[in-house]
Image (cartoon, rainbow, N blue to C red; front, side, top):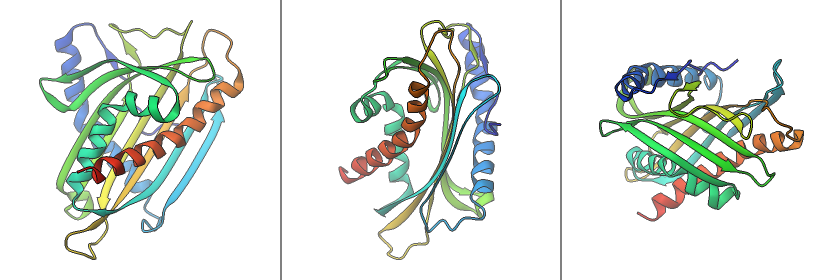
Length: 247
């Protein structure tokens, strides 16, 4: 069960594609925030945390769900982390190729009328196991100066979900393993100890499903995709830290 999932069908007509992406934004960000708040309500967010669940569903698809709480220290502002996270996510194919050894190509990155908080994109990855994976995603983000669900405190919400059907770019199950990914990155501040520094709490959740393809794939190759989920979060944190330190 993926509580972040929304059925998405993108037609060929760009105007219709654009309208679907725009209409989904508020829903995706709201559901993402509500889920993260519910998931972490019994946790002490001053402590780091990681949990993971892997299983094979009734259709033979490999699934991996991972939730983490991490901290970034010596930060000047929440906006600084937002900019760094946005840079990482809009250049994710470069970071994952360099850090994980997968040759990843982003085949397109479409925004809506110059609004970079709404996008759709596809990633193709040639993995060290020899298999090729493909994913087709929508992406939304917003930096809130204050949010009612957080007693009017600031936060950043970034959410991705999978496109089920894309009439312009159909999946290729005979040659690629399809990866369905729903993910959230939620960023808040701890109470300030120093006026010019803040510690940032980064909560991340990933629901990943590798669909059983129409060709033979070794079981350990699919398991390795799950290993990459934790590695991807680590690479993201490292990249954000490096971006901020370079400012």
